[in-house]
Image (tube, rainbow, N blue to C red; front, side):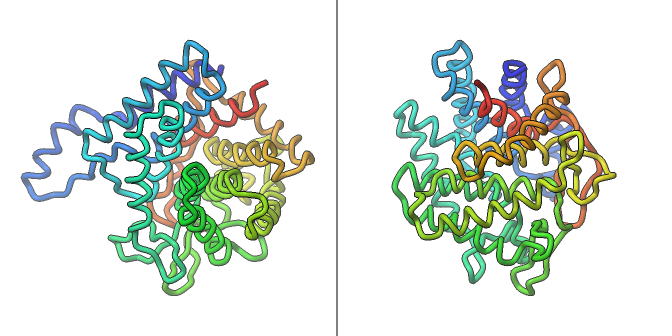
Length: 351
């Protein structure tokens, strides 16, 4: 199963999204007519979660036949980005830095450190609110701070800070999480909204959207993974994470999966949200952030998720992401944002 998932991830890393011939034909005509073409994002969180998962596999199977192929594919992913001008379009793109740091550490090739520095410098120069939180789409001037920022920026900042001894990167990761916990959560349910408006304090989207929950949990779990335990903010962050986990686990369905919106237990399940939540639990149990009483719920979810894997290694049942808060397309399919965290999870739990 794991090899099939890995093969699917390798294919998707270099081919997702699958553009039709018509898409490529239409682009120059759209440009000539004055209509804007969406930029070709060569990092994209949908691809970066796959690159990160593949490097997780590499590090655990460094002497395997698959390892060389993994490294070749991940390098091609970053070379394609480099040839395209090393452009970063969205905060989601930052998660690609997770795999970049791994490639640099493994190969010693300083080009990959330079690429990671480009991502870091982009983050540090990005527009923030008065508390230092990153706007999700600053060009839109909507003042939105979104859960995606926690999931796709904080892990990179924490890993970069720990790997290259950069205190500014580490401090920024902590600040982003602390601000989101303070402003982006429902105080009674202790579940995140999809985001909040930093100008008027209004919370955006729905409470407990599964993928937002997963993104916040991964952001916190992977950040804690790279923090020194004697850092003053570590214990506070750990206890906050444990309170969130206690609330989230109460919404686990009897079969082990999570619904697209956690409180909507009679609605459809979302394998992407499930994979994200379970991966965050797995990391935290491994790092002793969580204690063993959570393991039974993790394993129940893992077994349920395994049942969803198809013969070709794909993972259907993942909801499309919300392009704006409050708009949640109820369309489900096999997407990288489910396969990536699921692959990382299964690698993590390998004997």
